[in-house]
Structure formats: C-alpha cells, structure tokens
Image (cartoon, rainbow, N blue to C red):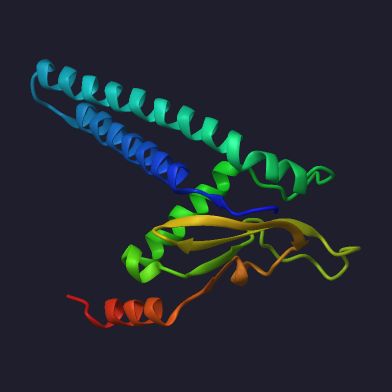
Length: 182
C-alpha cells in the first residue's frame, strides 16, 4: 500500500448500519409477538420499516465510501487471486468485531495493531502447494483505525485468525477490565 487509509468514516457508517438493522429486527419481533391492539402492532411495524430504510441508506453510504477508498487497493492486491479473497466490508466488520471483543476505551486502544486473516483454516497434509489468503493490517491511531497493509500471504491457522499487538496501556486496561467483574 502506498499510504494508510483512514477508516473513521467507514467505521461510523458501519456502526450506524448495524445499529439500525438490529433495531429494525427488535421492532419487527415485538410487532409479531405483541398480543395488544392492532394500533400497537402497526406502530411497531412502522418503526421497524423506518429503521430498515435507515439501515439501507447507511449500507449504501458505507459501500460508496469503501468503493472509493479501500476497494481499489484490494483489487490491486487480489487481481490474480480467485479464492480466499475478501471485500472492503469484510475489513470494516472485522475491525468492529475486534472493538466489540476488546471492550476498552478509545484512549486505551491507542497504538493497537491487528493483523487479520479472515480465511484462516487448516488444510490436509496432502494439499499440494501453499494456499494463500488476503491478509490485512490495521492500526488504531488518533481515535480511529487506519488500514496500513493489505497483502496476499500464506493461509494462517484458525487459532491465529486475529493477531492483536497490544500496547502496555491496552494490556493494563484489559487486565483491569477482567479483574473488576461485578
């Protein structure tokens, strides 16, 4: 990659999409489960429909943003690859998953670097050749993720799908979170 790609806007759009989609599902479930009046069911369904529209708009904006920023780099790296490829939305989803799993503040995430192979898997020993996959690296700096590297590399073991290189501050925050359970 020539330069780092700032994913702040993409991450915000993905969170907006995910929240609206989850809210739409909740409203739809409530409308279906409700034994109340038809007015309440109609209101719940109306809220669900509005959230679906909001989710669709956010997904459309996210896709446009990623096609402009990340997809050209991915296309360059994966131009001859036919299998174990990824798309730009996969990158944003994976980084959101990392944030969800860590559960630490942005300040504590500062400096964390992750290497992710979304196609990590094992192959039988009889497999001829060394299978490759698209692997990307991102670093959390100045309050947002920056995509630093995308490359084709040998497929990793499933136990090494996400490699997180922590800073001392993030290690301390994780230890504090894990020892302060309620």
